[in-house]
Image (tube, rainbow, N blue to C red; front, side, top):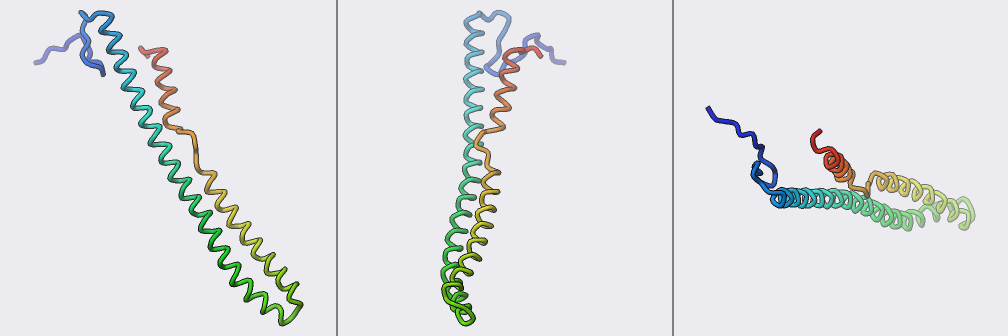
Length: 141
């Protein structure tokens, strides 16, 4: 059978009843520094994850813009000349331009919806910091 010590191990090391105030403060300081480093790591990870999402959304904006440009140029010319057989070339060009304006608006809205899912605030870190502050105010709860 093992005996249970009335002392509980602390994250910064074992602190006994004979510990001085200086040792206790040193242990608390070490624990707070360790906690702070962990919070910084968590914040970095969250920011990196959100930056990746933002980068993908930006890539979609760019891809949509380039594809829209290429399609607009070649298809516009083809449609414009096809419509020129039944109407004036100027009106044909205007109709084709209006069609591509609608397509561009749809692509923009889809990219904007994706960009809105990106959160610049590290939510998880903010929550754990709130919990840490609550614990620091009432460590016995």
